[in-house]
Amino acid sequence: MKKQVLFFTMLALVGTMGTCQAKLLPSGTSGVINVPSAHVRSMGHVSVGYQWTDDGYFVAANAALIRGLEVAASHIEPNHGDEKNVFSAKLEFLPETMASPAVAIGVEDATDQFKRVGYVVASKDAPWGLRLHAGVGTERLKNGFVALEKQFKLNSADLNLSLAAEYDGKHFNYGAALPLGKFLQGEVGVRSKTMYAGVSCTF
Image (tube, rainbow, N blue to C red; front, side, top):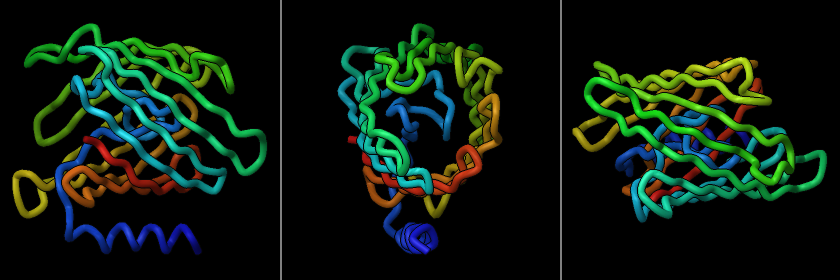
């Protein structure tokens, strides 16, 4: 019941939409749904967010300390098991150009609270509002991953809805990001066969 209430509350707030921002993974890293992207926060920008699932919830934040380097932290509280504090980082060492993708390397859960994950990922904007991501890593990302995002304009050039689908090496995940204000966005979807919903703020 809580899931349905949160879902329809988010949809009801669409009338106050603003620009969509990159989403937060459970590790706090910016990404798609359960896989990272090669993009990092712009210098001086900070993102904070909360997500709820049937398995528990997490509160996360990330920021760009220097150009190209994003650091992240997440407090994860599962319904079953101990709560954990997770720290992650991502370095975009090749920026995206008209002809080539952005490429980044990163680490999730650097202190190994659950399972430390290293990865390399490439991201590229494509025609028709599409964005492509692909990479490979260790542990949960050892089988490789791919993701596709599509943005739709709503009422003006500055308002958009983002839909995403991905394969994280084990599960197919999908979701939608709905701008709720100038700095705020809501998310709903399915990650690892479990529905999630949340909000994030980037400023």
